[in-house]
Length: 416
Image 1 (spheres, one colour):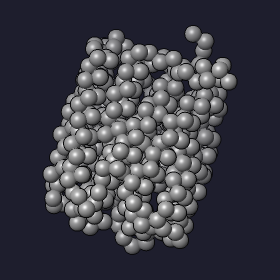
Image 2 (tube, helix red, strand yellow):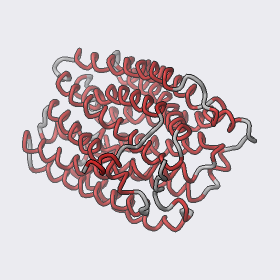
Image 3 (spheres, one colour):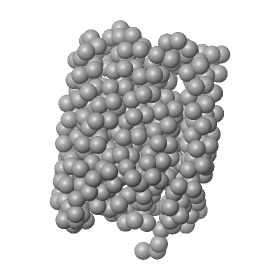
Image 4 (cartoon, helix red, strand yellow):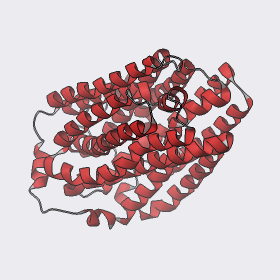
């Protein structure tokens, strides 16, 4: 047992460890809000479900524009500089949500957050990839997923205690606290990466590239398309679940926080072991398994929401989201390392920006379409999501033949 636990140690560079710590802090801030943003806009500010979905989706929609812009900036100036800018923008955007009273203000705040988010993910992912040894990148991104979900889970737990739809001021506290966490991450970034890494500096001396070269990489674009489907029909559902659980099953705010916390505990406990088990195994088969898992979870959510309420519903929602977390661990062990393996090193920023685009597109369409679907057919929304996850599982197996042989399996770390 001691040997097994020791084998889970990812042995990451100190700079990467510090960046993961900063990511944990900012994820905690996001966890304060993610489960309650729909509730805040709809139940507290009185904005309709459909319009609320549009506001929440605006973040990702603006990121669709900001993300591709960030790719060349990262390749030119390095991930550190672009990440620092993103953290400042996000701090401003989330802080402004505290002042929202009418829909246009919500759209404005979400647009600012969208710019920050669009810059954040390509910059952070490129920085982590460039600071990690190639055979440790799957461990780096697995640890990133652990820190992100641990932060979100703890934040959701604390946010569930603070948030109260009958006291709007409690949500103001959450937004301001979230803004502060981005500034903390900025301070950690300055300590963790005081200078642009030599690897990025060398890359900038090479001949310039373009997005056209990225788009011509057929296997990479197939992975991006598949990821868009999984984010749209899978992970974006987390932004819809709280308002569904509250309004259809009578689940309290504190219970919603616990549901999110259960999901993140599963990820924190299982992510590194699953990343370890993934070594040497076929990546697209693992993505197929997560599609089936997520489909089953959304079917369960539909059944629970239509037949139970209160504590019973909350318990079963938590079980479903715990199982959903296993699928997230599979995704964390595959997606970002696969993108890195498919990327041309000098264009890594552009590849990461295009990969982030799939997340942003999925998170834009998910709340926008899901908000209107919930207003028409609350239970049916989850069955539609389940059907699309099942389709994604089949596509993952079909797309494996497009992946270069050397990238089909997760790398096995070499002895130090």
